[in-house]
Image: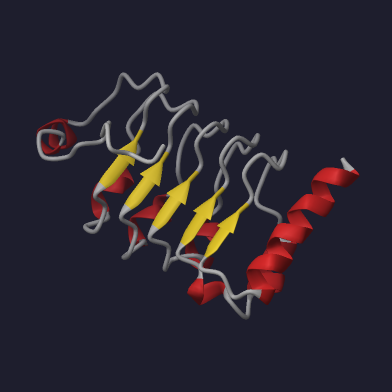
Length: 151
């Protein structure tokens, strides 16, 4: 456990010191996004455009996470235990790509339809059986299982 915490701290410090636009906390054994990270990232928070939280054990993303990183362009939470997204996800005005593959979704996250900048949604490996009639029509225009996807 100590190694996992040290690894997360190292990655966060690199992001701050190098003023990176990417925060990669994949494969860090996280069960949630640590509250202490918000304070550490405060000075570079607005510059972060890509966050990867893939292959952890995260069960939910909080409204606090979404509002603190509202400037994100890409969010990768593949391989976690998410079943839903907070309603505030629809306020992400810059998000173009979201990777929700290999989670526990059974219904399409409706609030994603509020994000007008969204170009790519990856939901592979979920057990989605519920779509709204409005979203069924919109699926014709989105390529959410793109072969060109980096995931």
